[in-house]
Length: 204
View 1 (cartoon, rainbow, N blue to C red):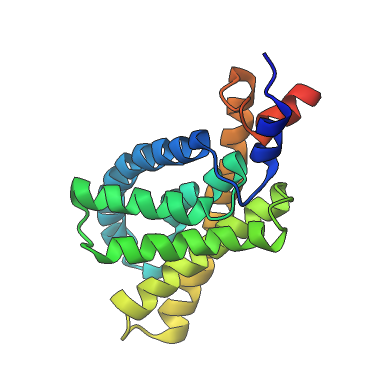
View 2: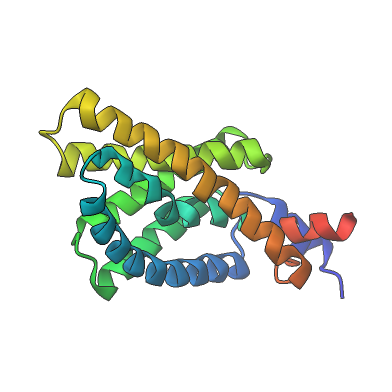
């Protein structure tokens, strides 16, 4: 049965959250919090292996940022990236993050970075360019936190600048295009039919 006109208007209004939007973002956050927790071990194992050029560790940064891009692509609501990335960070803390409470602040900052390109497009643009920009800015936000909080004494040009740049490029691909790929993979299943992205598939 098709949704009522009122439901359709609510789903398209970026400032009006529905219960299904909140639940979807929460489910994404919980699922990715487990991924975050596991990815901490990958980061810890990879960093020593890349000691010959430490900034290269940022190449795996993008996976931590997927909720900041994926949630806005799906629910298309203002604040979806901040809410989902922040909640995922909180849940990863409860699972046992080695970074303590700082993971929440960083998660919110990463969510804000991912949110900005969608906000700049007034939550009407959800193409590859917007996803790439969201992934890149989320990566910049996260690594700026790193270089100021965790690596304040590192050399600017030898570490900080390449670290942020590598994370931005990696995150644009992994979190940006990766999130677009996840949405595309979910479309045929029908799980997104309650969302604008799913309705776009129905119109094709």
